[in-house]
Image (cartoon, rainbow, N blue to C red; front, side, top):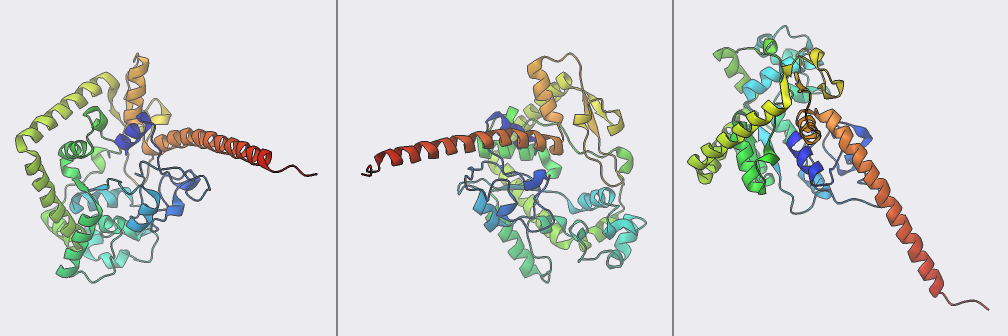
Length: 343
């Protein structure tokens, strides 16, 4: 999201933002076009980027975005995703009563309630976010249909475990530069909240999240097919260059990654949820104005960045409406002047 935020802001693009200054599109409900700020107003803008969290519904997204929109998403190994979700959402009702992830997996239906508002976090979270029907009986035939559905909707599927390689493929597909896909890790948990899982627990996670696992294996394979087509040597060279630039920018910008309680600038403090501590950054002092602007952009959490974009677009919207109203008044005056004069 940070990459898309920075690209859109630097090119003065229009973001499809959630209404009511929300950070998500009313997740976990199915996405609807009306969830987008200004969508239902008479003077509807032309949107360039939609990247806030939603439960994907292609037909509704197509109501908002241009016909030539490039669609991409990202998948993560369901094992590490489940471990992370349990830690991050432990305070929610689907996980709250379980003593541990292992305890949850022994008898998941003891804790998991598919009627709960937070049920999406507990089982096949990727499939849910992608808008797939999880009520459907999960047979090999349905797995095949699910894979083809995602493949038809998205131009590119990235893989979290190969994030740098993913960024290179994205850069190539969008004809972007290395600077456009430069990023620092955001929303990272502190090490103490991360847990090494036994083989038995990992296999239980795969079984419990079988639809997610089938999707991950399939798109991990297709991802590497794209890497081979791109060129292994070329990929290795560009990944090295991306990492070199990230290290150089880190040296310019960062004092280091720290616990949220130690972040000096509270506007750079990431949102905290669950029992995990989400780390943030302190910037170096004495930065030049242009350096400081880029450094702040690179480490601004999504909620704060969304507020910045929302305020900027609100000003643009007011200007557009004022300009439109001025045009209407002038048009009415011209029409009035052309009317035949009475008596």
